[in-house]
Image (cartoon, helix red, strand yellow):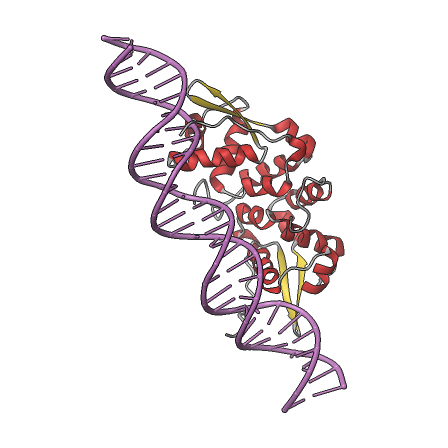
Length: 118
Length: 118
DNA sequence: TTCTCTTGTTCCGAATCTATGAACTACTAG
DNA sequence: CTAGTAGTTCATAGATTCGGAACAAGAGAA
């Protein structure tokens, strides 16, 4: 049971539907919003603190896999931690304006919207 | 086994994650893009012709349920047909710029992106 | 070194979601 | 009434997702 190396897709091969699928979950969207706020790489614990919610770690780990494989985040292992940052600029070159408009929509959600993990 | 009446959510109660989930599928995204092109209501057959792909009807029917319940389309029965139109203006009031930027991204997808039903 | 703590990963079973054939409803035309 | 067309519902097999338990891997202390 060894830990696999991190794989990141080239931005050119990222599919729009994968990006949308990755963001179609309140927890993942909140993670992305937190990384966007932070503007600096964060590990999972720091991110979840900012999200203000604790998930089971296995679930959380899977969320990171999905975000990474959808091309949304870039991760590096720093010791025992996983440091992640948004691939903002690259993503915006591939899908101009997309991430911004989604994050904007997320930030003005009302109570009807599921907050992180409804 | 009677046919249930059509239910449309109020736009205020539409969640962003539901919208993203509805659009995180190549067939549904293609349907939405086709309705957006058309600018006039289309039934399922007409829409799928424009999409250029035929799905099993049960699958197609489910896609319409998902799009309708996510607040993306407004449907009316016209005789035996189901006429659908995008809820463009309403949606844009709720999530300004969102649908436009997603459709824009969809239209500039490359071969790596799954076309309708990859 | 070894022990322990922390951070995250992997595995696996249960619960949930999705796709589709078959049967059905509902309407139209002849 | 019969046949045809458009779409819905049901049942179920298949795919995804969630989360607990066990594990990996590095940091720090002794």
